[in-house]
Image (tube, rainbow, N blue to C red; front, top):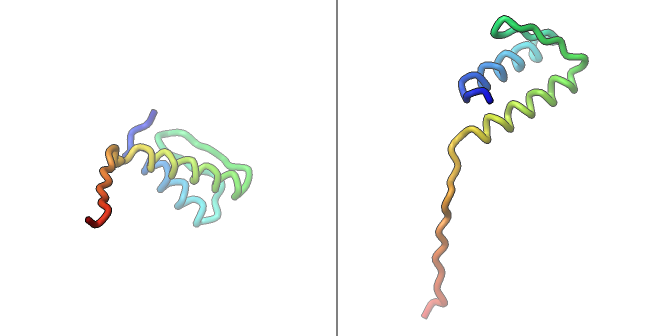
Length: 69
């Protein structure tokens, strides 16, 4: 699996290409051509999910309550 910096770079390259209305993205010496904007959107969504999963999450939540007595 790619690290957070690499995932972010891929996402940035894909977003820049999408905003320029270009379907071909090149990074790390590789070239990918997407068939449609929907395919690019799906790739962006997947990258965003992976980035969100790579960031640190809260693992413990403590809840304290009382009856007010």
